[in-house]
Length: 134
Image 1: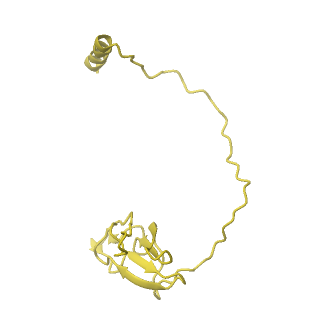
Image 2: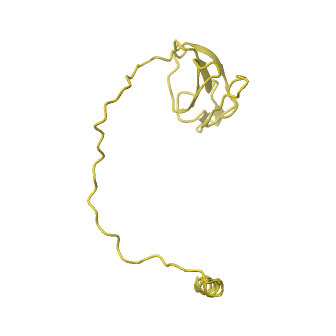
Image 3: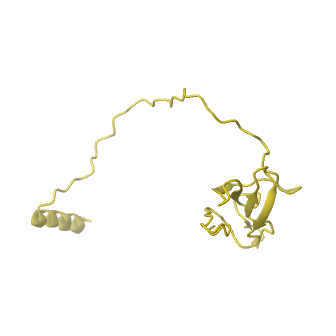
């Protein structure tokens, strides 16, 4: 550690750079300021708009993207949980993790069953060929 400090000081002396050290003084005590949100919310929550197949529930929704058509929505979802891998058994879920819904919320396409452990992103390409990244 001392050699590293000497090297940094020597480099600063040779190059003319300024070196700063972290202060050991305690940080000043500042009372927390609660967030203020007085702006009106122009949005309305619509519960259960997207219809999942019977018996399937939402897990961690990690990605949302509008399709090329401007009306359909792709969703990256983690198989009803926070991961598509069951760590107790080591088995992948048989549920698809990439879901496409039409403008009415109906599931029209899906893929990714047994392929993605922890989907975290999605992109629809300019050709509208579907989800390309997970």
